[in-house]
Amino acid sequence: MLCMLLHIRSPSGNNFLNKNNILPLPSISSIRRYLGLINMTCGFDPSFFVLLKKHLENKTEFQKHGVLLVDEISVREAITVCSKTLTYRGLLNHGEDYKATNINEKATSSLVFMFQPLADSYSQPVAVFASRGPVVGTELAKLIITCIILLEKAGGIIHGIVSDEAQTNRKMWAELGVNGHIDSFQNWFHHPLDDDRKIYAFSDTPHLFKNIHGQHIQWQHIKRLYEEDVKLTGNLRVCPKLSKNHIVLSVSDKMRVRLATKVLNNSVANGFEDCEPTAMFCRKFNDCFDALNRKFGTEGLRFLQSFLIWMNDWEKQLINDSTACGLRVTIQSTLDLSKYLNSCWNFKYLLTGKINQDKLEMFFGIIRQAAGSNDYPSAPTFLQLSKLLSTYSILKLPKSENCTKNSGINVMINVMINLMINVMINLMINVMINVMINVMINVMINVMINVMINVM
Image (cartoon, rainbow, N blue to C red):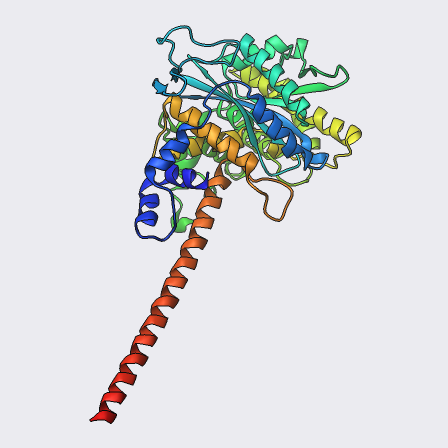
């Protein structure tokens, strides 16, 4: 499996190591043959959940608690034929319940479910679906309920679902009874297996921050601040984090979370004078982003409570009503889940940085990077790679600890580390052998010369 991952990441590197006898790697034809054995069926795989159950049996009680991440990725239309089953791959497929009826129903997006533990460092993709366009909200709600049931039966303890602000996800919220409006607010729905438990809804925090706009909060203030700040001599700037890239935004730059969070920042707020609403806006959302992305057990809940009150009073200033609802639901769910875990499961704190789609985006990034830059992988390629990475992350042996690593980035990191170690060992062995051979040759030459001199 490591050899397949290495070939996917760098075919030329694989060929170099093989041709120079640095590592005994399988041939390209062997790797392709093994890749062809991967089961690319969509939906919930019963065999996978059997493996997941065995995997979770080795975890502590705290490590079994988690949330379900939900997101979609666009894929290119493509079809391949499985020679063994004589079936097409790359068509619409939601599992056994809903499949394509003709060859024209080619998949254009893939839906992925991922289990994210709240007290562990790994993340595990659990299901992949191929669809033509985004999965409709009604069908998505059914799939989420099914996934929660299967994860609970496998030993996981699910407390929430995390999605972005797509319209299909908002429809899914409505189907499950989640509502972010003040007059009919509800941030949870009943657990499908236990009426005494709740499943909390969360919006992905980075997506929320990309969609925040205001009426009285003027972008011209930030632009004017940058223009005056760059005029200062000696690089003694008031707002060093603010650059031209933050002011002159392309279409793609408007979707970059890093740029948004550096604008909504305390250092930018400190640079304003006579623009208090804009400064307060930056400070509030800087602190809110930090509170919703905690990686360590520090204070953050108290600020979220005050921020929720401030946001309810300020909601009319938001242009995007969906953003206000998503932010309100996410903050209230964070507060409620923290209290619930503390009172019922003895959690000392909740790391809010676990409740976003970062690990799922990393997973998508690994697949996009496979075999070079591939921003829009074909549907069969995405299904094949996602199955390979998902299976590897659950089967690989842990190293000196009782958990697996991140399913995406660390798979490739482990491959490269193992590769570098093996290469260094082989190089050292080759160097030592060459040194020994040279020493022996020199000794033999000296002996022969001495013998010839003595004979003469």
